[in-house]
Image (spheres, rainbow, N blue to C red):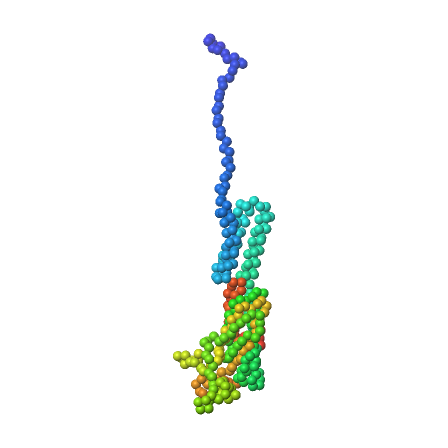
Length: 317
């Protein structure tokens, strides 16, 4: 070793090396859910039921708008069950029960109200009866020119038909039609304005002989009003019409109303030629047509049974 060199001692201290490292551990801060005012929360919960109830009420006036509102309410209820915090705290099976209950209610509404069938049935009988002078059938003074008309209008459904409004036509003239049976209360009248029957009175000079409209005298008169096109406005006076209107407050489920009327075979040549009788010999009708509208569960329905053959059971589609 050279002079002046120093030898490091074997057990000497090693130089100190200081390493400074600073690390920060970020802890996740707890999430804060904004509080919802109590009134707003309850309003959100009641949104769906409110739409369902409101839609059911609206169906009485605007059927399809009400149906849409009901379905919107069911959709809101389903969303509440799936996302509302108070429902998410429930067990899965409780949520499943709630969802199933909503689907069942929506299905019952669809099948039981929206797509329920409400057909109309009708049976018509017509015949020519021979009755003695002065005979009355259901308070109708029977004339030799009459043929009988018996109509049964049926409600085969399991729900009532309300605000029933129909028009009945046959291939013959209907002189009169009235209700004779059924649970509902009905009114009938020709669809054209009523023209009073012409009255007859036998006279001796300027003095009346016997009562007015004494048909034993052999005289009977009618008035036939004509429009500007020279067409008869009604077949003849006294209530006769080609079509009769039938209005009933309701036809209960599974029931029917019974109508009885008098039909006349008209010879229109008698309008112009007074040597020809206005009436042909009586015959049975061949068919009857009914056009009806009625309300079921708030839904206004319109149906038609066209040219239902006599003595047949017919039903609307």
